[in-house]
Image 1 (tube, rainbow, N blue to C red):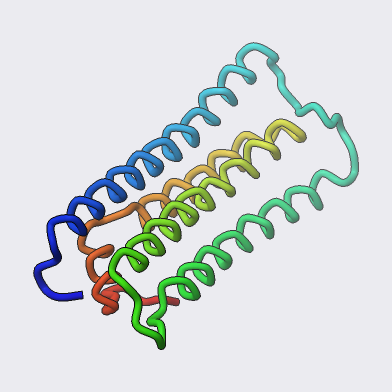
Image 2: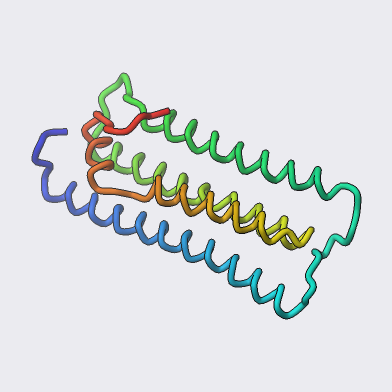
Length: 165
């Protein structure tokens, strides 16, 4: 891709970037929505100890959820590295833009998974502090992978400015 992309490609880049930013904003809003629902449940059903009831496997459930959240973080890095690396065969700018856009939105959706796991942990065991911690992780991931024009343009030029892994 040359230094001054044509108008059609610039328009397509703007449209896809705007869509990806909207997806990122919705992911952030949903993460905050989980916290709001958690607070409403705790206030309405006080004391909320989870719907699974007391049991001996609560700690193993927590460990499993945290391992799942860590696995999602690793998966995000692997997906991004695999799909955004340089291709041996030349690729049209439109196909490259489509791939960058698709990977960006897929990664954004995966950044929500730790918060969803935290919300499930809250519903099952009443662990609200774990929801806060995993929601914070998700928000940091959304911030890290939020679509930025400069990053997309560097990927479109096949010269990424960020570390692929």
